[in-house]
Every structure is written in structure tokens, then in C-alpha cells.
Image (cartoon, rainbow, N blue to C red; front, side, top):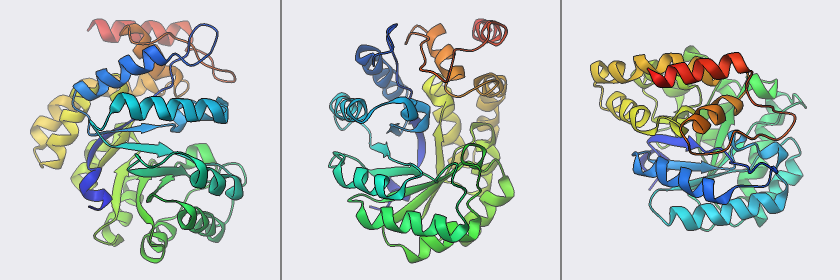
Amino acid sequence: MNLRQQLSGTGVAIVTPFKEDESVDFDALGKLIDYIISNGVEYIVSLGTTGETPTLDKQEKLDILHYTFDKVNGRVPVVVGIGGNNTRAVVKDVESFPLEKAAAVLSAAPYYNKPSQEGIFQHYKAIAAASPKPIILYNVPGRTGRNMEPSTTIRLANEVANIGGIKEAGNSIPQCMQILRDRPAHFLVVSGDDDLVLPELAAGIDGVISVAANCFPKDFSDMVRAGLAKDFATANQLNYPLIEAYNLLFAENNPAGVKAFLYELGLIKNVLRLPVVPLSEGIHQKIKEYLKK
């Protein structure tokens, strides 16, 4: 089964809940996993950047991963986030992390270094060669400082056997459409921009790896399924009420926005690790008002 068959629909880039002392809150993580799965999402992404992975140490990552696999218990596929800007370190991680139960590895493009397109290609080629599971590329230039051009994505899709898809968060529908036009038939294309998912579904994407689906798993995954079925009347009806939520989620920082929503829904504590801080009072108040509606 290729990734397009296995991971179509909604994946959730799940947050890492913390206790007041900033240690990982496994009880809250378990509650959140159950909430997300019972509301119909297709899969979970553990240790994505929404999970605050830059501030987790390696042991915490391993503990979260083992806990997530046990809690999910085969109910949905689990994709594991393993990325970074030191290619050798990422290769070591994909070789040593417990990936037996994983469907794939999601790997963000290298940040800060600003490699050339050839550097990005060679980075992913090295990771794919070392990984026991297929790699999903992750283009997020707003965070990495370098856009992975569609030509690089398509070159990787065609030339590197173990690369199975992309999470495209370039905030550009034309770029997404270029990838969809040129991709090989097996290659998974999912959105990483919650607010663009609906028009990108019309263009032919296979789904999304979402932040919003942490807090609105049912409405969001129903919207994506309607879009995949080309029922855009239903998809629009579900999407319109969420537009304000997308703006609030990303008003200041991810995952500060989604953690504020989840706190107000009674699922986690509103605790983040520096340098990320909770939302300002004004935006948090708007979230309360939105949820009341």
C-alpha cells in the first residue's frame, strides 16, 4: 500500500501537553489522542514541530513515541516527525528511533542553514537512504527560511525511491498545483496550511496534516472528507465557521494558539516551553468568545 492510499484525509500534528512544571503530561496526551481518534481523523503525526520538538530532549521524544504507539494501539496510522538542520544527526535519528509501528517519517526541510536546492535534495536523499520507513518531505519556508521549489520536490519524488510524499506548507496554491501537476502517481501530496486546505482539495491534494484538527477534529476531518469526495457545498458549510479559528490559531505563534484552544476545551493545561509563551490576554479572550459562539 502506498502512502496515497494509507494517509489520505486528515492527519493531526498533535501537541505535547505539559504539566505546570513543564514536564510531559502523559495523562493529557492520552486524553487528547482518544479525543482526536474518536472524532474521526485518519492518522496522527507524533513529534511534529507543533509538538514543540525543538524544546524536547531525545529521551522525552522516545518516551512520547512509545506512549503514543501504545495509546493509539493500531486504531489509526502514526507518522513520526524527525527533522533538523544537521543531516548527519537526522540520519542517526531515523536509524535509531523505534519506527517499527510507524507508517512514515515526516521530515521538515533544514532550517536556518538556508541550503541551495541541491543541498536540500542531498539532505533528503541521505535521510531516505537511512530510513526504514518512507519519508514525507515537509516544505515550510515561513519557518525554515528557504522554499523547496516544486522542481526539487518532483526530482526527489522521481529519483529517490524511499520518498513517498510531501506536506506542502508554502502558503501558495500555485506552488501546490505545480506539484500536483507533475507528481508521479504514487506520490502523496498533503497540505500544511489549514486555511488553504479547501481550495487545495479542489486542486487535487490527498488531504492535510493539520494543527486545527487538534481542537476541531470532527468538523475539520468531515470537511476534508467532503472535499475529497468533491462535495464542495458540504465542505464549504463546514469550513466557513472555522475560518475565524484559523486566524486565531496562528495569530501569534503555533502552538500557543492551539494550546489555548485545547485549554479552553478542558483537554490540556496552557503550558508551553520557552522561547514560546502562552497567547496574549487579548487573543486568548477572542478564543473564549469564538468558542462560546
